[in-house]
Amino acid sequence: MARSTAQRLAVLQRRYRTLAAQLADVGYIAAGSITRRHTRCANQNCRCRADPPQMHGPYWQWTAKVDGKTVTRRLTQTEAELYQQWIDNDRQLRAITAQMREVAAQATDLILHDATATQAEV
Image (cartoon, rainbow, N blue to C red; front, side, top):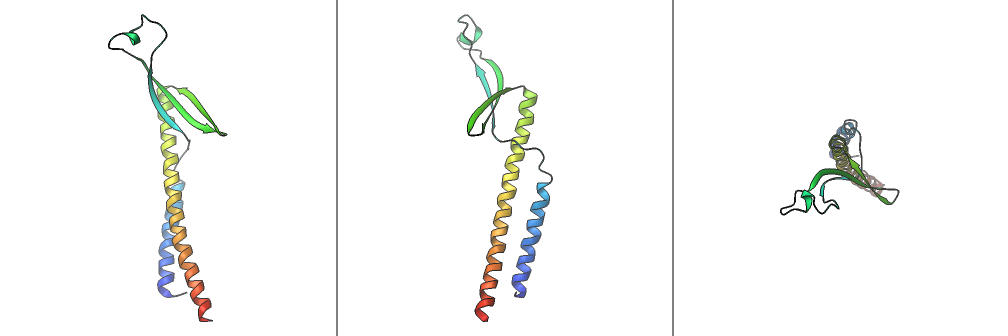
């Protein structure tokens, strides 16, 4: 392996290990999204039917795909804040793993190119 290739590979390995260490700090994860809703009720004399309407709420909802089906669950504000943190953690996890894949692809290209060049010399 050429010296410059080894140096570049060492840089990529350090970057990969740094990203892997960040994974330990991610925390709990959850898929889905949080929505804040205001609704109307069926009572025709309610304030939500007035002009201008004063809707009921806010109501917090978590929606996600579970086993191929969309699941929606009503949450308290505290639960919604927790879910939002977990969803943000999931996005962070995905971003870190995407960066790890990119670094791994660069390292793979270097290793394969070096192996091909070495074999061509033989």
